[in-house]
Length: 181
Image (cartoon, rainbow, N blue to C red; front, top):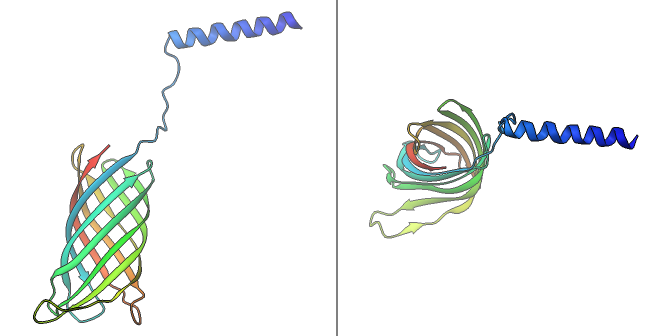
């Protein structure tokens, strides 16, 4: 019995050493790589307070843990073009799920944070604060243009704020990001 085990062990060692010399080992196919992208864009929001759309800018950062999962943080400063002198700024963070297909990255996200509702006075100095808890559900499409440039073709967010009776703005962003792999 001991002679049989020694023979099997020796044979296994020979096979393993030959496979490494012949490069017969398979390379890992499911290597997870992390990526960080930071960018900005133009934002169009449809508030439910007032009847006109408001516009501004956004900044975002995405950190992808692997091929399908990541996190996103975004700031929407929607106070640049405000026909009714109101602004709805949001500061949100949360997880995102990515469906990659070639150079396209379709994603969905669920974010939570703070919403800041501002009514600007005519003199531009006074503001009536309305900071509250906010959450958003959304998604979008990123297109990898080059190794480091990503175009955010569309990003949609349906937000819900706990301000007074609850605000529910719909926010759309287009932009670009720099990707660090």
